Image 1 (spheres, one colour):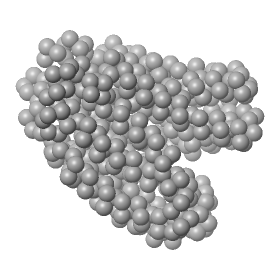
Image 2 (spheres, rainbow, N blue to C red):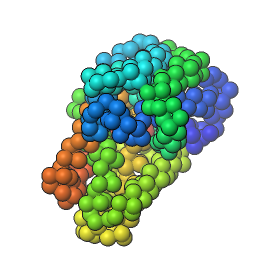
Image 3 (cartoon, rainbow, N blue to C red):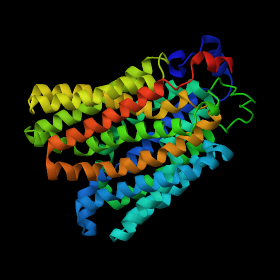
Image 4 (cartoon, helix red, strand yellow):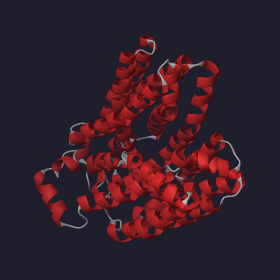
Length: 416
């Protein structure tokens, strides 16, 4: 229990949390189920993309542009929802997101043209802004404040398995029912599983948690993080996300361009997911001994080192294995840091606004990264992709070093 809550959560506080509603374990289980289903369902193009392309008479590349629309819409809407999270609480916003997702999947099942197909992803992007990761982190912060860091890491351990569980599930359903009916099944899951789980399993936001000088949960006063600090946080998170989201889309092709046969490229790329989940688990087991800024600096340093190893190794199996290990640990830990860095600078009352605003550049760059990196790989080769990744990773690392000197000390937070 202490390891789960993390960041200075002592035994007495853990006992009080376990006996007073809502228990963090219950909240975490509800969120994990909902997020696992939601992200798993939204990953269906990876499995049935070729079927959708053949049915609609469009290219596979056009099919995968649908998720890009999803990320763009989700990013644009996230800052607009900040006031709704603050006014109504994450639980209510997430329930509305589940309700909105159902017609999105229904529209996707009815798509007969690219226009309707992209419209469906726009609806799903609207729902995603309200119900996916940012909303889940905001809710955990409402429940546990800065002590939610360990819970966020635990949630990511589960959501990191979404493709492993739902890719075969989607493949099975599409074989039995067809891809359109599979979309309807997932739309039904939004209404019949995720929505009731969030409505009845998640707590309403408590009021009056923030006092005149700080936050009741020991968070950092909002005044401690000015505009320049926010822009640095958003820039570092977005730059690292551009690299990691881009590589997740092109890794197999990148390894093939380095000279690996297709089966070996797929095998190495598949191992990456295991390493990333392991890195998230290691961060979770840290039990709050370090904050998101420290994680980001350590993990961020691994990314350019991994790229340099790949470039220096010339595509040998040893260099590729070292790249997968180092990059996997770094990118896996950075996934946790993206959610937990703001906890070092914002109290629970202001975390929702900060996280919603950060989601704009994060999701926009996440949408742009795959097509831009794929185009660069085709046009200029693997060396150019690795060089760009090194540049962006080093800039993000430098920003995090600057942020490490700006974060309020734990002693200051405690006195407030």
